[in-house]
Length: 140
Image 1 (cartoon, rainbow, N blue to C red):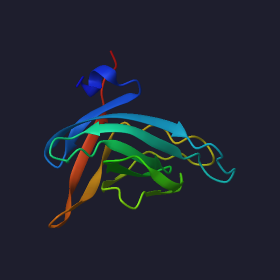
Image 2 (cartoon, one colour):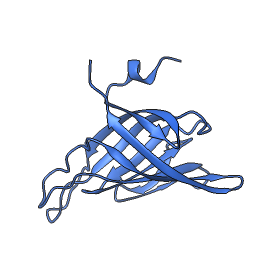
Image 3 (cartoon, helix red, strand yellow):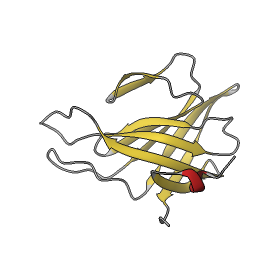
């Protein structure tokens, strides 16, 4: 399998998730119908590779002008809207939560220069919780 760094056509992030090296190729896109009374939210999609996360690679989520929430799932099937996505009932996801940059008024939320926060993943023994930190990598 080729490395994610070699195939990423979006923004390559690297860092640590639960003491494991992580590489993520994340795309940030503005929501399709932003309301006029708040900043434009960004949807987040892509792929992350984290050893020992049991093939959880698909990423979906959103940056809601400050709070960043995304799931790291085995499947990307998602129901709901950008502001309230819900994974398919049989999907096994880890939830990652971070704080990102925000913009006043109705401008676009800028792409985060670092995503740092907490995660929780379902396991056979209950929820596993920890921290993560990802930073964009220099483009070639």
